[in-house]
Image 1 (cartoon, rainbow, N blue to C red):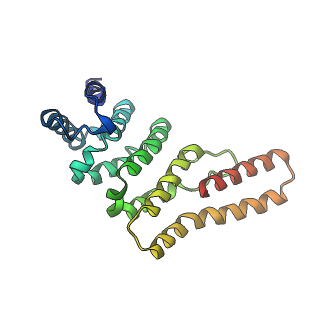
Image 2: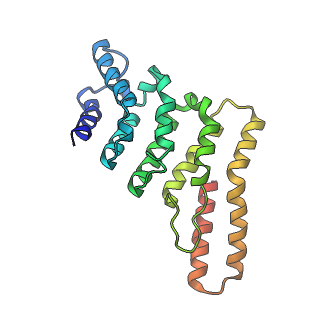
Image 3: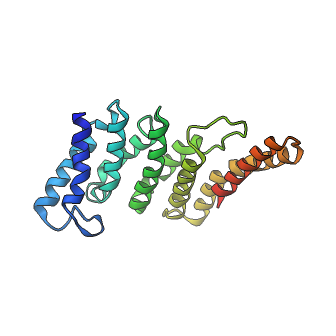
Amino acid sequence: MEVEVAVRLLYMLAEALPVSHGAHFSGDVSKASALQDMMRTLVTSGVSSYQHTSVTLEFFETVVRYEKFFTVEPQHIPSVLMAFLDHRGLWHSSPKVRSRTAYLFSRFVKSLNKQMNPFIEEILNRIQDLLALSPPNGYQSLLSSDDQLFIYETAGALIVNSDYPAEHKQALMKDLLTPLMERFKVLLEKLMMAEDEERQASLADSLNHAVGFAR
């Protein structure tokens, strides 16, 4: 409880130190320095590994709220990315944590934009298994379709906004979308042959998600 409260207080400091466009790490040097010290402590303390979902969620909420800290101290980006991408975040045992992390991860990546360039292919490799369409038999994948949409949008943004040559961007986008397109073809064939209305509806729902992911 003490750990959760400590991280929550850090999160709430933003409301006590109002600035424009989240610029908490510029301007008043004394305030910026104190907050920077606290953020550095947060991301190096190992608190992201604390075995309680409330603490885990507070950690991710806080690093996203203070994303401009990582433009000042970019050396901490890899460790926070890893927290998002392993059992602490998108692969967490709690569906609640996985779901919220999918949204927060999308915000974190988009806000840091060009600073993601060194990590793009590592990120794409690590999220690949999370992008598979849920089978139309009711079995739920690790992420819901809504959560997967955040991950697809994030992957697309990473590729499009990268500094890679156009040919490499095209290859990465092809790697991202080809499994989805192949799965779409299989599901469409099954839909054409399905006679049961419930089965048809389930297949159509999966096809609808596939179209949404590819847009």
